[in-house]
Amino acid sequence: MEWDEFERWGAKAAEFGANYHRGLRDRPVRPDVQPGEAAALLAAAPPEAGEGMEAIWADFLHVVPDRLTHWQHPRFFAYFPANAAPVSMLAEMLVSVMAPQCMLWQTSPVATEMEGVMVDWLRQAMGLPEGWSGVVQDSASSATLSAVLTMRERATGWTGNREGLSGKGALRVYCSAQAHSSIDRACWVAGIGQENLVKLPDTGAPAYGVDVAALRAAIAADRAAGHVPAGIIAVTGGTGIGAWDDLAAVGQVAADEGLYLHCDAAWAGSAMICPEIRAEMWRGVEMCDSIVFNPHKWLGAQFDCSVQFLKDPQQQVDTLKIEPEYLKTSGAAVVNYSEWTIPLGRRFRALKLWFLLRYYGLEGLRGRLRNHVAWAGEVCEGLRARGFEIVTEPILSLFTFRGPGDDAAQQALVDAINADGRIYVTQGLHRGRKVVRFTVGQFDCTREDVMMAVEVIAELSARRAEG
Ligand SMILES: *Cc1c(COP(=O)(O)O)cnc(C)c1O
Image (tube, rainbow, N blue to C red):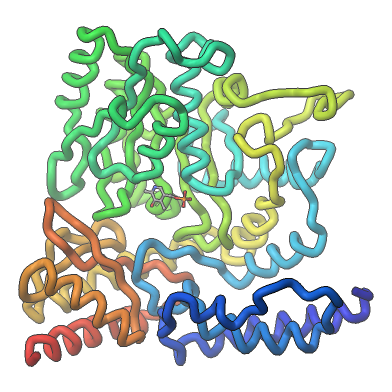
């Protein structure tokens, strides 16, 4: 492709982007498509001869936009958001056109140094202690796996990588039953095993935090049984209902027992830029060794962007660093972030953080988060007033509810809402009961977008009741 042609189509792509976003409210959040429909629109075999951009572009417009679930739709209330503030899209476009691979300082000096500064901006914004550092990863799953591997190496006297785990006893990791499935998977992949991930009960409303007495008892019982406690994973803002652990209490257990403490704040971490929120939910956060949060969820940095803060990065580097000759860098001491993570190759993820934080400022971002929390509360009250059962009260901008009827009726309500297309929600399971899960967080949603959910849910629930 000649660069003149690139320039023309690049302008067209930007124009498409603006029009796509302007038109999102007129689209159903989730498309009405059948499995296999999209694949059937694609040629079964690759072309032998090249095709022109006109044909590729026309097919893009024909095939793609109508068959996407629109994650940037302002009435997306499902899962957690995967936000992309417009300014972070621009940063990603620039990263795409420069296309660096940022594994070492020398393979992209500015990307490495900007990453260090952006992690430190976020450390300050979130009130974390001076002296902590961190790294930008692709996902919370990767950061949590890195932390679990560090727990493993620490608990085996840094011999696991070299010798394997045979004969080293049952390494044990502890978390709340409210913890995310990425923690199970990290324990599988790290060779710890599902049966050695000890899931402790929560203590119920309002925070659904882990039962700290049960945590202490489990560790004592494991030591008595000859097992090897390796670490604890705390949660700030669990995926199901927003559960959050008392970090001061859990941190004291970790300190008393000499265990590594990782905190999964993938979703709720973004809200910790608000001092009043972290004063409540992050008391004791300085007792953690590692924390992960995803700016690509609630903060607005385009997917993917997951920040892992580390009290002592050397422990993770000792776990993950490998340096064959071709990766050695001569000269001055520099940070090579690929030594902090599992993949070697790294994208330039810091640029979108730099653009995002500068364009909106912390106050602009805090304002959005506080609005989302307030509006989720209003939707909750609106549904309560219309007779819905609020099963779990809002934690930040997440709550769960039930309409009339049994579990099957709840799923049918979710299906009816999503088929309608004006809003999008997902179901959950709380204490064995099916619930409808509702969370606010799309970057540019308005109060009107959010409040429409009350009417849509009430209308579709009533229509179902009429049969
Ligand atoms: C989303 C989420 C994860 C997983 O995040 P990925 O970046 O997709 O791996 C883990 N924990 C919690 C609490 C989450 O909300």
